[in-house]
Image (tube, rainbow, N blue to C red):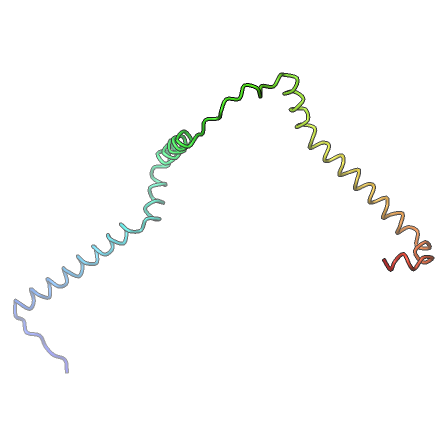
Length: 133
C-alpha cells in the first residue's frame, strides 16, 4: 500500500524547499545554542586570550581597591617611638615560641602525672573510694 507521489515539478520544488529550510533551521538552532552557551564561550576565550584576561583582572582589581579605599583619620598622638616598635616586633616574634614552650611544659607535666598514677596500681587498689568520684 505504498503511495506513489506524482512527479509534479511543484511538489518536487516544495520538497526541496522544505529540506533546505530544515537544514537552515538546524544551523540556526546550533548557532543560537552556541551563542547562549556562556560557560563554553568563556572557556574558549580564556584559552585563546589568557594574557588579556589576566591584565583585565589585574586592572579591575586595582580599580576596585582604589574605588573602595577608605581614608584613615590622621591621629598624631598615636606616634610610637623606635624602642616601642622594636619591643612590639620582638613580642610578636616570641609569641609562637612561647606557645610551643608552654605547650611542651603542660604536656610533660600531664604525662608525668598520668605515668605516676598508672605505674602505682597498688595505690589504686587500696583506695576504692577515689575511683567513685
